[in-house]
Image (tube, rainbow, N blue to C red; front, top):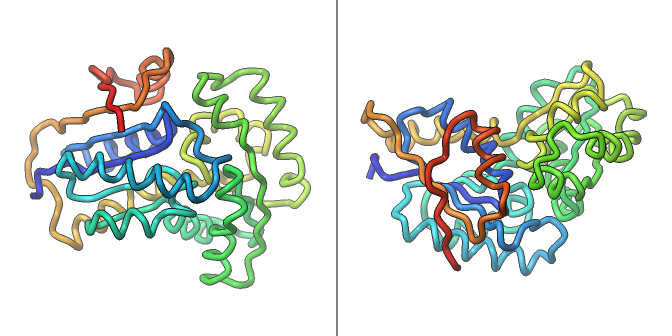
Amino acid sequence: MNTNPIGIFDSGIGGLTVVKSLMEQLPYENLIYFGDTARVPYGPKSPQVIREYALQDTEFLLSKNVKMIVIACNTVSSVALDVVQKVSKLPVIGVIQPGAEKAIEETKNKRIGVIGTINTILSKTYPNIIRQIDSSIETFSKACPLFVPLAEEGFINHTATELIAKEYLFELKIKKIDTLILGCTHYPILSNVIQKVIGDKVKLIDSGKCAAEKVEILLNEKGLKNPSKLKANVEFYVSDIPHKFTEIGELFLGKKMGRVKTVHL
């Protein structure tokens, strides 16, 4: 089982930020990525619909004999983590807990900003976890729903992205935060613009990267690490292929993705 792949899923291209971190952190682990591009974005949808989608995404990965599941989606992590855990019966890692813990480590003035999809922000999962760990920390949250379609469209360093970022992030800037959680795995794709707008003194927390670090810890704890030193096999599946998926994916990953396969759930 140790040579079996790690399964990763997200609503679209954003989860590739987690894939990139896993490839860097665990270069010998086989990976299978599923992006539900036919139904992206998940953020504005009802929790019940998101839970149904999460179940279908998980069942697809289970059909590929994965040894662990990484929920590379903050929205699913916030409202459907229990669904994935219940149906998979495998080790499951979401992106919220690791991101919250890292932000707590990094903040100096105990003022943390959180940006995410509508459902992630409404769930208050990040503030609740942070409060449980350190009740003295103040959190300030802002939903940024337009960031997902901008990332999916490849507007990585676009004027439109900067204008929208200024609109979204203004109220967080005036709160004097020193740490900002990118509470959606799409957002690191836009990190250059976000950093420019929020200012160099604010530390950006990539929740996907934090999750990748937790994956390595869990693999070691469960004795699931792949002993092979052969080049890892990374497979990409989507529910629909937007015209820019491969182009943006290869730009972000810095390598060829090979054939991206379409599956219908």
